[in-house]
Length: 332
Length: 279
Image 1 (cartoon, rainbow over the protein chains, first blue to last red):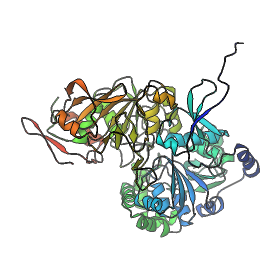
Image 2: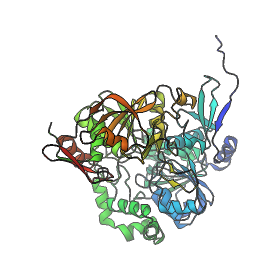
Image 3: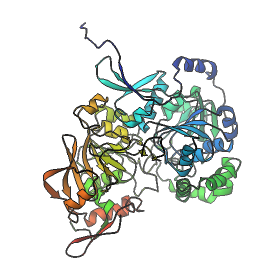
Image 4: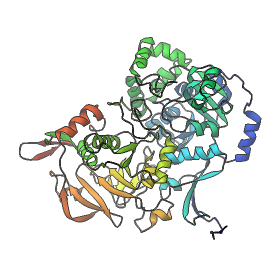
């Protein structure tokens, strides 16, 4: 055995100044011990019940993908309908979602990422009702990765030298192994994750087809996990091809059967987007007219199903399904 | 190849980048607009064996074109016939490991040392104007071996020092600045492409190396807040061809979401190119 001489100490060379969601790996383990069901317990419930039960005012929330692509839109809409307050939002890889949540009065803080900085967001910033902390998309998903591993931080090779670093929870340290300056970022363990998947069984074993952003780390890292699924499938089907299970049941606290939950966006393999309404939400959010959009699509209805019945209709849904011609790898 | 008779400034920038795309190299396209269309244009016309990834970790897709509006990532058509699907962290990790040769980025502001601002105009948190943030561009600019930046040729965008570094260039321009900040060695800005010009870097400082035929070096310099270095000989870039703009308009940027953006139009009057419109 040869020994290598190593720098003995870790020196903190620079620190960002932003607050970050509490890091508590042991507390997370205890939460898992005390709250996550190891038994196979059915968790099917409505979107209303799931949000009432598992989203609280002030929670740190992450959603997977975004409003346009496999977005958990039925759950996002329900959170707005229930007027959850002061949420801290993981605003990674987002176009309109943050602007909608801010417009609906639900958001207090945002870690970003990327989001369209819309008039509603600017108004909230100017009024001191919203705080934004700076990260980037990959830095946010790597924070979730650290949270998903149960560790307090993770080194990364990007983010150093930026002003985002200065307005974040990152630090620059001397790596005790190489002696090189290395950026570390705080683990992220959200209070709640909402994730839309193509298929899940009633216990929460979930299949996701196609590419993604950070579905699996988000499910592992979050204290409360709500999964909505295009289809609820039998557990026998899960057992027939276990390699397709991306999220195991024990991470999941609620399962919501939610066909067309990604409307007006696409769910790969199931339906294409509704381009007219995609442009409607962009125009509304970007032009400072988010309220009429929310009134029509969120507050004016009691559930996602009612929205589909009242505002969309079967003909359009069938057309969206017909236009999604690619199935390879996107269907079991 | 036939010269295009009329084209937009943004199309010029995309065609210039497309011609830089090389077989056997990997590209990380930031977002879904100009960078992605430039890479696809290059792949279709000049370098079919160039490979690319997008932020959702997809490797080497053969997208079913055209895309539906705003559906350039995560959608089935965008990741069609890929070699592998992934996630944002797999994309990030490929770049951390050194697999990404080139990152292609679009930005609002760039400074002398290639630092990019997409977060904030004015002093942070003091009543300035917030923008959308870096998205994936920070990791692309940090970890790809070389970055190609696309922006407009405008005094407001080509500035001495950005208000906020969202994605890193050569930082303060001193030797080793990126390494001291924890970034991988031997990486950084490589080219900047605008509708008027192309720049490289000498000793981590921006240097004008080429111009399009319808603008002069003086006109370019008038649209820079600071004076870049000048290459000993300023090359003249080839204007877009019919084939290139045809492909952009019919398969890639079909709704003009990108080509309709700011900037003028260029028309061939039989003897020379004339620039009109824009700001």
